[in-house]
Image (cartoon, rainbow, N blue to C red; front, side, top):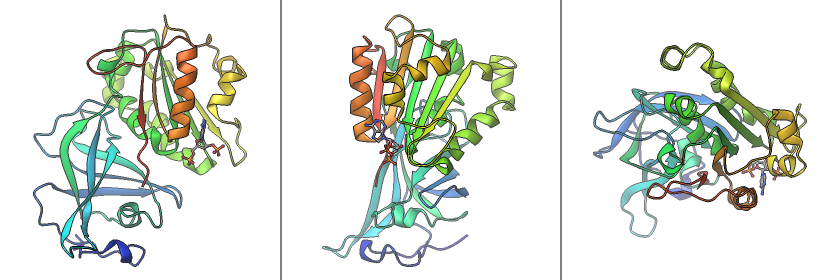
Length: 286
Ligand code: A2P
């Protein structure tokens, strides 16, 4: 296990110096995977008492010195939990921002290091916020895939819907790896195959697109839907209130644009207290 030493935000880009945290909410990192120079995922221990619904987020972070007071305090950001509610550990999928206060340091964590996790999950990307439907659309850009990594491993997703469509728009091909690997792994997921039935994964339609590097399907999902191309490719009718439900998680501009489109298709925004046809959450950005 590496020991962490306090690092100020000003020195954030220097070599990281992890240390053991003397805080009540410390959890231990159990796995780290780097995908590109902008993306990584990690797993950590889960507090025994922590319950959450797949799709929710928590506050996680590291200790940092406050430049003004010189005192050390937690530097926390909202992160969607990428692991499903039944998993013994917690998984997170993160961007690396080289001058970002938190991710400039978080990207250097190693197995055995500790992070802070406030075990109070909340969020709107949950099944409870949607009315029953036939087909669910999970719309993600970039690290917005994280809550769907949780929901795609959640049995209820397949119990509630006949079809599960996951769209993921990224700048470059390498940014699709985390999602692609996860979906591929579902085919051999023992728990889901046992609980939902062999071949459950055939309910999933995966629609990855890139915008800045060549790939088999290029373009923003919003444009591909407007042109009707996405519906044609997927072999499904245009989104409608009767059969379709949607969850959205991406950058702000994407969220606003797709929200407007979903409203045009006749869907209304739901909430935990008032389930309707779609829900939206902003992907974590440092
Ligand atoms: P683009 O390359 O055309 O900006 P980011 O990494 O900046 O969060 O972006 C992730 C992906 O989301 C990129 O492929 C980006 O496309 C796409 N994107 C950004 N804004 C929108 C939007 N308003 N509608 C659809 N896709 C968007």
